[in-house]
Length: 180
Image 1 (cartoon, rainbow, N blue to C red):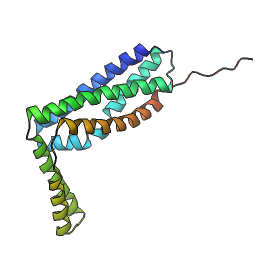
Image 2: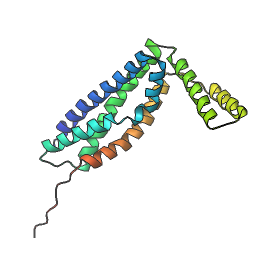
Image 3: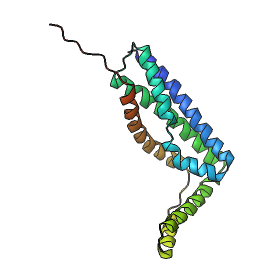
Image 4: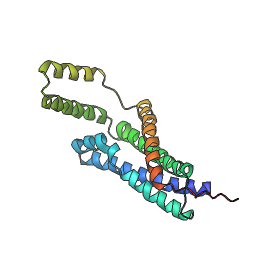
């Protein structure tokens, strides 16, 4: 298959997924801290990217006469993920450092609240709750370029695994014929 076509489709779907991710990021931030916190917490399990990449992969396969090798499918899906992840990482940096510099602290405080509620539901002792929250406060971090791109690196590992799953759905190898 034409590598240029695979790249073109990967860029297209990567940009679409990136824009959706940025829309979710900024939309939930504008809606308030609770929706923003929950979207950040569960955002990686929302399968919109997987669904769009499967649709795009089937279209790519159709454009190739009904076949798409594993290598081609993986190239398409992983490149799409890389593009969207980089877009979202840049948008995250802008949000946390330029638009709302207090967002890291606000997110951290909500995270502590949720941790306390979870520990209370698990009937943890007051001593355990206090120690856990105190330990978390010592590890409080900032949302720097280093933090964002370290997170991006970890996200790309997860994206590679998701790409493998997408590829299993969209690939269809050409049959091998043996002529004597």
